[in-house]
Every structure is written in C-alpha cells, then in structure tokens.
Amino acid sequence: MSKGSIMITNGQLVTPFQVTEGTLVIEEGIITYVGPFDGAPRGVWPAWDAQGAYVTPGLIDIHVHGGGGGDAMDGAVTALEHMGRTFARFGTTGFLPSTVTASHQEILKAVGSAKQAAEQGTGGAQVLGVHLEGPYINTLKKGAQNPAHVRPPSLGELEEIWQKIGPLLRLVTLAPEIEGAPAAIRQLRSWGVTVSIGHSDASYDEAMTAHLWGASHICHTFNGMRGLHQREPGVVGAALSCEGFSAELICDGIHVHPAAMQLLLRAKGPDKIVLVTDTMRAMGLPEGQYQLGGLEIEVVDGAARLSTGELAGSTLSMGQAVKNAMGMLGASLSEAIRMASFNPAQVINMSHRKGSLTVGKDGDVAIFDKNLETLRTIVAGEVVYSRE
Image (cartoon, rainbow, N blue to C red; front, side, top):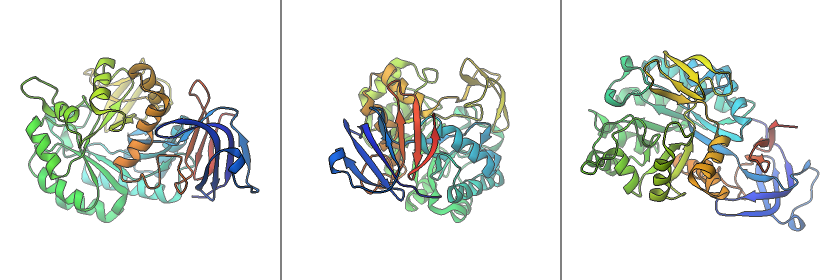
C-alpha cells in the first residue's frame, strides 16, 4: 500500500475525549502533527482546508461480512476490494472480514484471500486482519449461521488457520459452553488473539468462567445469546456487569431496541462499547434477494432477514452507526467516534497504530460535514474516497 502526505487545516479535530480546532499533518502515511496551525511544520505536501468539518480517526469495523456486492466468504481478493471501497464511502478506514460457519476448506480459502488483500490493499478501507465468527458455536443460538457446518472447536483447524495467516487472526467468536472451548480459548490467547463470546447459550457462570480462561469480548451484544433473566443473567448479564468484557453493538435500531442500547451504554460506558455493522453483501446496494453463508436472505426496509424472519446481518454503515449512537443513545460526537475507532482498535490490539489522531499513529482519517456525511476518507495519508 502506498503512503501519502497531506496537511488538513481548519478542522474540528475529534480525539477520543474532546473536539478541538486545529491542523493535522500526515507524512509518508504517519501522523506527525496534531495541533494549532501556527505550530504546524511546513512542507511541500498537499494542503486541504476542512472549512470547519469534523476530522476524526478513521472508523474501524471489526465485525463485517460483506458490502458492495462482495462477501468475505467469496474467497476472492476482488470481493474484499468491493467491500473496502464501499466502506470507505462511509468513513471506514479499516475492517476485519468476518467469516461465517462453513467448512474448514471454505474458511481457509476466505482467510487466505483476506491475507492477500491485507498485503496488497483494497483501494479503499484496509483489511486489518480476520474475525472468525463460527463455526464453533451453539446451534441453539445459531441465528443466520448454517447449522450444517456447526462443530466443536478444533485445535488442529485453528493451528492450520494460524499457520496460514498468523497474527492477522485477530478475533475469534465462539460459544464457551461447548466441548473443546476451554482449550481453544487458551490456545488463541497464547497467540494473542482476542476471544469473543457469541452465538452462545452459556449461563452467566459459564460466561464468567470463559472470562477467566481469557475471553474478553462479547459479539453483537443481545443478539445470538442467552438473554437477561433475574435469576439467570446469562451472557447478556455477564456483558453488562463484568468490566473485563468489551461489548459489540449493532446500532441500527433494528437489532437492538433503543432502550436496551441505552442500558448497555449506562452499564459499560463509552470506553467499553464497540460499534459494529455486521453488514452483509447488500450493504451499499439496492434491496432485494441475497445470500449469506449459503442461506437465502431478503433485504426489505433496511433489514436483512432469513425466510423465517430471523435477522441475518445488516446493511448498516459505520458512519450511520456513529450518527445513530448520537441520536438513539445520546452519546456525544467524541464518545460515538471513540466507540467506532479507538475502542475497536483496542479490542484487536492495534491501538498503538490505529484509532486516534495521535502523533506516530497511521494516517487513517475520516472527514465529515456537520451532518456527519462523509467528505473524505484517508488511508495511510492517501485519499481513497472524496465526495468532491
């Protein structure tokens, strides 16, 4: 991936904790200055006047299956290019292609193409690694995952995936109550992979035991898991009460009721919530018939569903998720951006490089107008999307 240089002046710089007027300089793909215009270095790089627009860290989506007609399970770099370019239109600069429950060979093909796309770029948002969602889940909470391929965790399969992509395996979602989960969680943590609980019927005690083994994240909270009961708090109860869990939220007003989303924000605070889209192939395209993991999906009124009526991913963008977090949850702009950039970077152990407008970090930037519509998206100092 090429690395560019640019100066952005007269912007409202959105950091994880505040909004300030200032100038941002990216040199050879790295942020080298954040502060007042008078103190900015002088160079020959292009300058762009933001005219008071919001300049934010690039948004990071750690749970995304497809978009722009492409799907992570297509096993093709071209599909990931379609995804990356589509996501860039909405301020996303980095994403984890997320697999679904499928055969081992299909998953190997998918992660192999993700590695190739990570190395050569997509022309849009950057592939930051892989999120393995399934096949090690509980059929009782399978959602839109194909039950024909659900199976217990296999250390052999995980080892083969690790040998193929190494540290690009950044996030694995599994059900901790099924046979083989303890060994899998411990193995993944030994590699530095973040382990997420999802598509799980685990009890509260089982979820908390998994946390002791090393699980630290909750996949699309409230969806695909045992819900909250006063005498059996389930996975949702563990997510709400345990500070050690970060929690994903599909903030589209379809997957989770606004009252439940507000409860999550009050319980976790803006530091522990990660906005995700869980979007599928239809994102950015007209509504109609699509496929997800070999299952037939219909998208109507913005909702993607199986023929049974079950939700099957979304058509949400990260930019819209930020707006929804402000409108539905009452989050401030800075808090909403934090949940869409800094927090996901922390979950996948990339906060030293991504997620904030900080000197020394990668030059991944999104610029939004006052209505939070994307003006420009910049990856490593290179403009990959411009509305102009």
